[in-house]
Image (cartoon, rainbow, N blue to C red; front, side, top):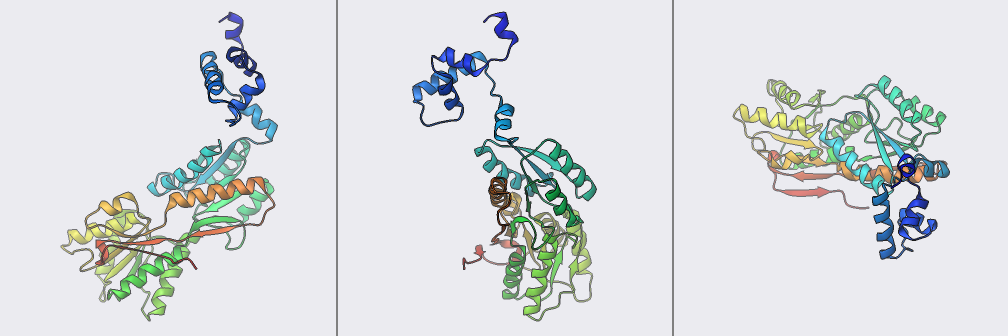
Length: 348
């Protein structure tokens, strides 16, 4: 290769000449067009590798008036749950040749606002947002001001405004209560979370509604942080009462695993003497001992649905807003004393 060639960027014309095809044919290979014969495609790809050709995606996106990127603005990227959500989003976006830029609000509305504007500076085509706890619905107005397509996921800022994809938390918790009541539990507690965002409010709404339906008291609600240690401490508080709980539905699996661990340390068997149900169906829920009953919310499927909705919104900014709720499943295992089974919402 000449010194001149080494000093300048390899062009698509260089590739076409090396492969013995037209520039138009080389361009079709880049776009994965089925119109190019397999042997020709192989020859062009080989020339690209040999010459060190790098596709100028930025120039192509400028022609399309797109950046070919989206922003993921999440509230807790360290959680295994959010890792599954991101995997679902990435699977859809990768198939569309779109890269995702990740930002973490760490449950801070102020940091979230800064990160939102930074992503806008990178000219992302849209945002998947899981709002930080305590975020004002005014953020939706800011997104509109920035002309930035956004899909809220797992949590929403307004029950009627904006695109949203999430699990049906109310129904999931109601099904958990119904299962416990059918198995003779009457003092059912709810452990974890607070009411600073929609996902917590929906869980508690489903909990209270189901207990009210059976004439049971809902005085056993313990807002806590969402760690195993918090679950263990909450159990101590529940068992110290004059009229202690005999079951607990937990905000997530981490809290539930803390409850089962503390039960075992006290010589009590989860499921037989005290029923425990978690939420999310994390991988260690099935392998724990005893295996954890849980409300599976399928964050990967939520991520896929949110990504597909964002792609539609990018293409049709003025289209009708959509709100998508994915049905959860109650995965019944040993920790609630029930037989192994799966309950899911029947399609209406």
